Image 1: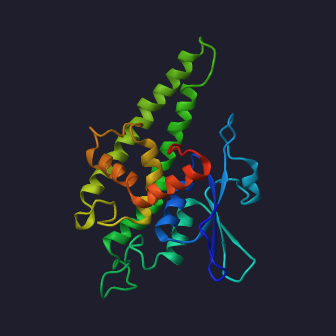
Image 2: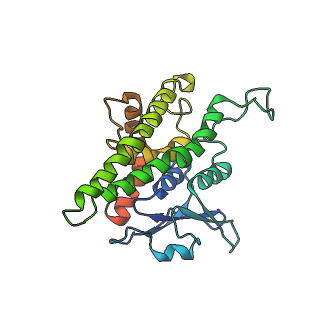
Image 3: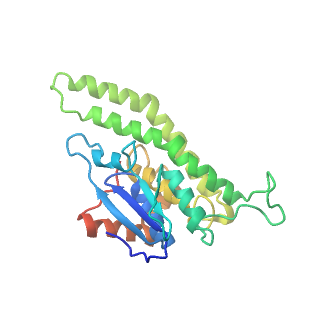
Length: 260
């Protein structure tokens, strides 16, 4: 399924996997109005792992992955890793878009320390989303699976006890630190903006959408404790581009679930 591209356009293909970070790339493509092709993959129902067919696209067999074919060429470049994909698409298709903040202050072009606060936040959160935050989200998923594992009843207290200790002693305190940090970052956003980098949606907001939407109401992210962050996540979920990407998947695949 695709948004039609003409022969004189660069062709972008997204290899989309259910319950994965690839939905952010679909949203970005919709925001940029980039013609693209979409190939859908499903996880193994028992193992929840990506299908082996994805390894034919990229050796790691993960999603998201995109391929880019220049106009008039039969050779494609395959690009993996969410942040790299976002940066690549913005570099090539987002130069005139507010999704990519202006890098330098007037008269300070090319100077170290001359960057705008919006751009510095953008670059920071691009790395933060996949670096500092996502690791805790993935560990929380593993711990949840341990807690709910189908084990004999006499072992269940042991697995639950281990999971609870990891939550209370490690995950809980770290989630509190991160959510409080994001709450403060939103309150001090440039130009009193409602997004992390300022008054406009950026690629960094799109990249952060997956762990925050998946963690909403879980991992201690509640409206009562973090009202500004909660409102931000709800605002993200109401973005027209986000909704368009969700509806596209529903139309193709019959359903969409925003979870890890």
